[in-house]
Length: 326
Image (cartoon, rainbow, N blue to C red; front, side, top):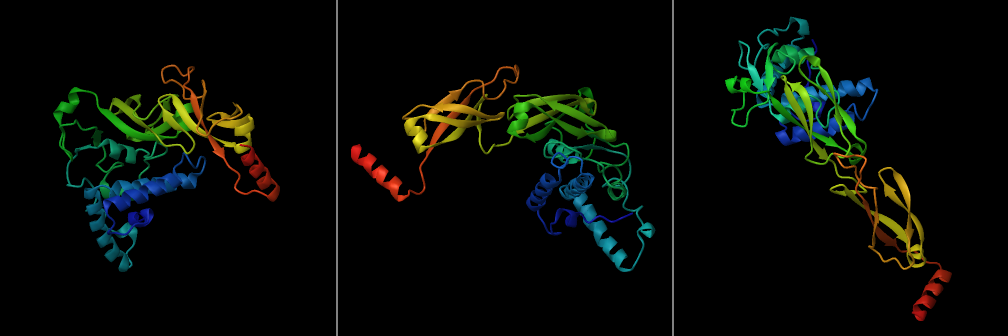
């Protein structure tokens, strides 16, 4: 069995604090996320390694056990010992040792374990992880994972009140504005390796919750949507705002310019004498209504008059002539 250096995988030192580890994880996960590398098995493998490393190093109990194991492993490796001869038995099993138990996880832990950063191919823990922690999600085989009640204490143990109602898990998911406009999907991997595809409908907003029935311990998973900022558009309900560059001559004399939308450019008529900052409303060019996607908000396009950066001699004289006429 191959030893895994989780610190090296995330590119952090052994003294890294929680913020450094989380920052490194997010950077690498964004780089290697399967949604950004479709059809690339190497990226998916790398993403799983990153996910596994973060699952261990972000959990104080797992990290403490891993550090103790790593110290002994280094001593063993220096003597030239073979991995198959190492005494794995003393490290296997639950963090506290002995017996089966139920592990309660937070929504953030669930997201990190099952894909993180909006879905994709999570899970798939290594044999090293299984040997050290005793099961695919950090517990002994057969361990169950439940979403804790608001008044439940964190950590290990079974709360009998949980059996009285279906589990409900909320998973934060980041999506782009384009995904909110066109609709999208996310794939989660749950207990037993079960992969579930969730459809994200058109028109969702930050704070929208998408329900996936029976995804968490026979209960439901709710994807809590966060729509990421866009470089060209800002959202106001179902309306979008953007700016449209208009050259000085078109603003003065009138003409047409192309205005951006999430479906491509549309032509916008600029009347003569249009002032900088004037807003044009393009009806039906905004976001779909969540409950009726065939209806859409509007696009509010603000004119941004651009001045020529340089003038040749002829142009300067003409502008001076215009100024004298005014």
